[in-house]
Image 1: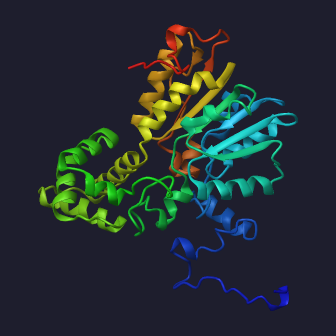
Image 2: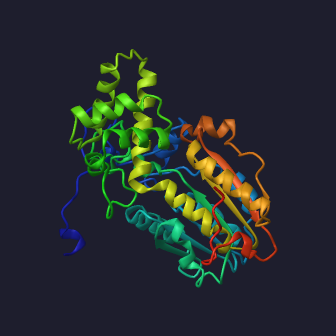
Image 3: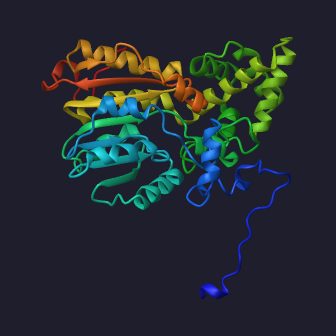
Length: 366
């Protein structure tokens, strides 16, 4: 069909002065065309729909010190914000590998990076879980000079109601980082006992009211098919328990419930533990790693693994305390406020058999 005969596609119409729904925000979904509008949203400390703002960029660059000719891995590509910043100092001669388990966002981020001029000779994107990064070593020359892992859920995933990550908009209760595999949160809830659900809320999110929330979901609300249904189940559970909580505390319970289920659906702690096991064998001697975490369960695992690796001589140095986003960054991007950044530098010495198992993985530091 010629260009003249193609039907005109009208933009999505909405009620009121400003679009409220994710799919209606046509300007935010086209930042190149509506740069002024997007910048206005950013200036208010908000994240435009369909976009993710990378956190602690300057701190990460200072830790990883990318240099021309080095080979790096962005283990959680997301929107590609960190990758974009890492590419410039790696050139000329360097290479950046990037992986993401979410095929939908991977395709968008790869197209964005190609549009910025990074060809396949310098930027290689693959769909995989970051704990499987050892599969890249052959193409990466045996190891990476630097690895970045941002453990947060991207803003694109949070803001899109179809993904079911947020309690703020109604949508299917999914919560899968890779929507093409595994069980959704709705399916998981049907398979759990009250005691197991209570345990998940406690272990994954430190939820102090896990009992009444778990009983409410399992006894009065199954099947829970939507995010709005889960929100209502939590609210009803708290009311039935006779708890007169302020709305701010109720919202925190809802947020923790969503987080706990997301971690369970995606087995995030198991995946992170596996990543930390294979990490030393994926770093070159002297290689640097930075891990950006967003809640205590993640940070505890990273802290313990790095401290044990330092004691065993695997790492030459590690972060004594986590770095936090600056006050200015937290003000400009409130979603960064709970982030913690830890780093480690691999020892120049060969990895000893005492700290590795037969597969070359880091032995458990439990």
